[in-house]
Length: 155
Image 1 (tube, rainbow, N blue to C red):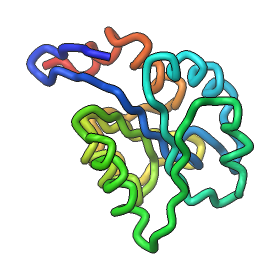
Image 2 (tube, rainbow, N blue to C red; image 1 turned 180 degrees about the vertical axis):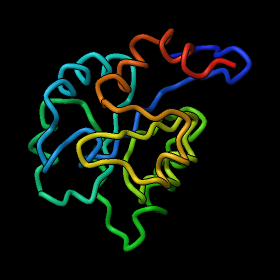
Image 3 (cartoon, helix red, strand yellow; image 1 turned 90 degrees about the horizontal axis):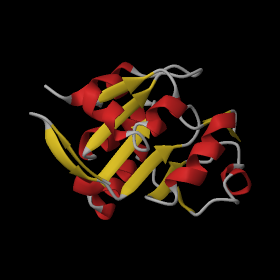
Image 4 (tube, rainbow, N blue to C red; image 1 turned 45 degrees about the horizontal axis):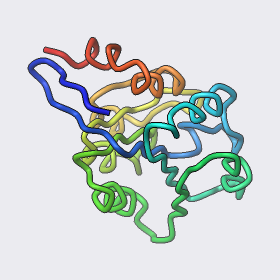
């Protein structure tokens, strides 16, 4: 996706990277509208989910999608998430998350979106984001309806 945001940035997005629990899932279960939106997004973007997989459910929940799943292994998830974004090419990546361990990933990505969902959102994640959304579905739809993204970020 290519989009010019007046007086802000020109975006060329290839990768969308989502934290799992608290962002696209609750208690290990994929949120209802996310599946429908992923069906559409996977036609235009490379989708990634990065998670500690606390509930051991991510693989089963995302089995129907063409999504790269990255299970965190290190003791420093904040750094591991940021390094993952950089390895993809941060300049062509979007990151979505809600936790303290998402803050560096949100900063590193071309656009970082903090999700203020049922689990809440850490202050550090919000302060590191370009956009804060109360709903993951609305946040993901920004990339299917880019005029919404322009309206939010233009200066």
